[in-house]
Length: 201
Image (cartoon, rainbow, N blue to C red; front, side):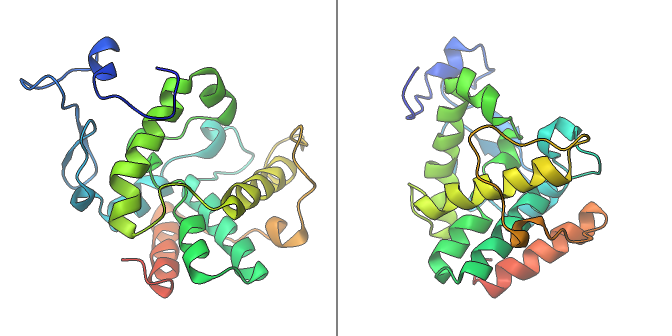
């Protein structure tokens, strides 16, 4: 598989356990089971997304301080808010990594080297996340730009020693203002409040 369209039959090729129908690969979301080959948007629960991503570390935990995918999403939303992005785009920004609630976080260079994973993540986005939260199948260009800026800030502020990511622009101050987020449960609560303010539930 080389395209960004996921074919559930690839699960059999990869040796993923499947049910009797030969298509479904079942995973645990935190509150229920979900069929990854044919995910039901109704099985995507915002509280599961918040809890799981608050416990999923960016950079495989290799930062100076604990830094989760949810921390990253909150910083991305802060950048979007500072830019005055429309509400619809802010919704996409704060949820752009939501598929990782079930796939886990894989670093960008690994995704480049394993295009099948990128395709699978896109499959979860298009089949489950986007319809569940009324988001576009293809993310607005602002999402990638803001994601890159947040990553550039993380390299400078969370790596020891600080690193500049090749190809990424220098981040603005708004991206480098870190919250004292606290334990995962507090990060999840902050995320859920932000989502509620954006009409996401």
